[in-house]
Image (tube, rainbow, N blue to C red; front, side, top):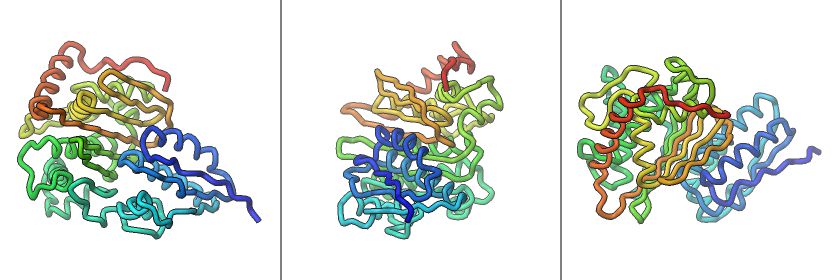
Amino acid sequence: MLESKQIFLPAQLTEYWADDFIQCIVKFEDEPLVDFNFSFIEFAKPFGTLLIAEEIKRFVKLRKSKGLKTRAIGHKANSDPLSYLRHIGFFKFIGLDVGNSPGEAVGSLSYTPIEEINIDSIREKYNMQTESIGQVVQNEGERLASIILGLPSIKPNNPVSYCFTEIIRNVFEHGKTSHCCVSAQKYKNKRIEIAIIDRGVGLKNSLAERFNITNSRQAIELGMSPGVSRVEFSDDDDPWHNSGYGLYMLSQLAIRTGSFFICSGKCSLRCFKDFKKWKYLNFDGTAIKLEIIKHDGMDIRKLLTDIRRDGEMLSKVNPRASASSGFY
């Protein structure tokens, strides 16, 4: 009888634990029999949940290709965290026939479930086969924002809609993929967390088409700079956006109000207003977390306008070549 190697899911599915989990499970990829134990999960947040789910999905698919067996333990237990994960589509996303499928739950005034977004599918959903990708993605961003905010319709240039739209558009601009996964939650303290993951080419491979970069850290730094894009792109109807400003705008909004996390290629970056930490993390694709907090008296629309103005000034002073050297 094969001896099983157990992998315990973290008690808290957050980015703080997810990166250690990702590095841990690599060691078990060639074990004959592996059990994932979900028994000790106590808490789940959108980004950590989605990041861990993506890596489990990758891990299981790789092991299947090698003819190796992977099982699950404890995922049917009657606890609030596991019930929530079953509801938002976590288990079916990773390949277990338990709970809802991704996107099956309709969401509520506080969360969107795990949703898989395919550009062809949303074109069909909105009957917009001939429209530009920007308009199609904007419709999807408005739909997600309306769920989180509990509004029947979204006004033009709503900041939450803008965040969803730009974070999805960034995938299709940089990732060379037509597919991504999103999840989000609104909390009582005027905090919103938005998570998105794609398994595209990653920032380094994308930006290397136009810029002289050699590692993942350079790519992340450059991608977060204003005026940087793999393609020439503009949207004259959006007062906060122009070519190459999407990731800059999003990261600055998150850093100035809450926090920002990105991993792509060989490293990750966690940022707060006065804190920045780089870490080695091998991730095939790109994963981003925006934590946006509307502090008392804050005008998010004005802040976005200020961020764009700052970016335009910075781009003129230090145009598109500021990526520093790094280790990843």
